[in-house]
Length: 576
Image (cartoon, rainbow, N blue to C red; front, side, top):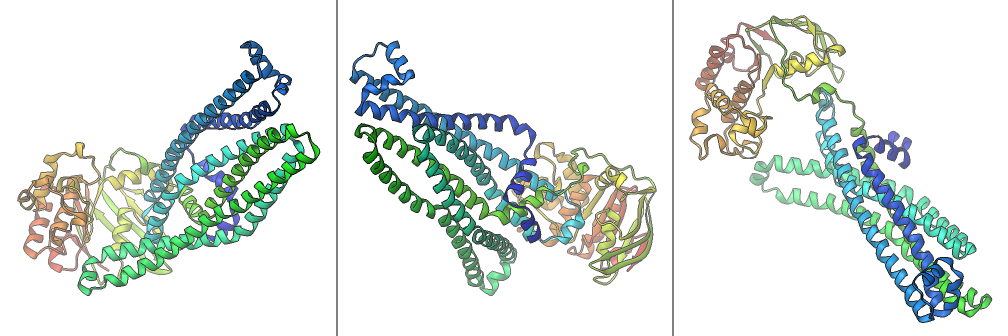
């Protein structure tokens, strides 16, 4: 990770992010840049138009030397000095109002663009992460994935907005500099040189500090996610052990460190401004002194006022750019990690919304299969043939590879060596990716630990199906086969009753039967039961298994069980 961070500096990271912005946003971005350009141009006009206004207060006869004002005076027949002063003042006020109206529109549009682009990037990261193959997730820390998605999502909109504001600052800076050159070229060059040198020195000095703080914040975010998951995931034991204070203290410590780091980054972004602002005010006074000594008195106020406005705009542009740099540099570790997920390659077939299934007709064959995990050989030269419609049982001691074998059969894991053939097709071959997706659609899997969403019974049984598309008759039929129908019907709203987060209001056996009903609702030709009846009593387990067998003779069932009685009805038992 750190080598990646060192290799990709801030502009390279920016270029990579730009490459992930959908092309459909191009028109919106171009329109935003056009508004930014217009906003910058009006800043030039504002600074330049202040000089005639101030001149009109001290030496109104000089206005006749300005062609555009002279044209306006002649057009509206303005002859008296007071009328000219009022006219130039009204023009200046009008330009200020127009300029700020456009600026507000620019800020509004930039905020909208940042929101939609941020949503595009965050959605893509989530999509890339969730569409990775199963073996990817086995090798990744869930806390790391969640932390990257959550923290990245929180800052990415601000980063996009910061970039757009920086573009506005650059354009404004260029136009204001042009205006200052028009007023006084020497002062413009002097201001540009001094401001640039100061900010470059500050950025050079703070860069390493910000990088270190960014790395600390990244690590703390992962710790916070881990702490929250562990504490709420183990809430029962925490209450029984009365250990809330331990977790509260731990959370406070890590969160306080994070807040301090963020506060220090914010301070580093704001602090130089006050020093440079004082320097700018002193510069204006010194310029005034210079003008008073070397120029006619009548020119001091107009030039000094115009230069003061120009320097204020110039300083604000410098500060906006600097604060944007500090903000991004202070989150560079998070942005780099987020970018890694943006760059993940996904299987295009995983995004297909159709549920076309593999037409399983003959057999599943594991041929000379080897599987190694973390240098540990789990399966060695393993061979197995599973014929359609048969019930296969798998037993063995813990750690002997039962779940690994199931995952290989389902295609979630790829053998280190050997083949998994479904009706003679090697499902792990690169050219068969589309077939593999169809094969996935043909499998229903029920694990020992059933995940239930805080939704209704119907939505949990028809898991992943939009509510309006749920076939309630199929749901009820699946519930009857899993012997959970009567219980669901006895609840307040029957199949519309909410099960609670992770099914907190249900027993282990009820959760497992909902999981079985979910698998049966899918209507797959292959059913995998990974200790899916371990929480059921013997009688209920026997009824459920018998019901599954009797309802579909074409269903191929593969089950893992510790209780030998569960495997009594199997056509073949494999011992590992």
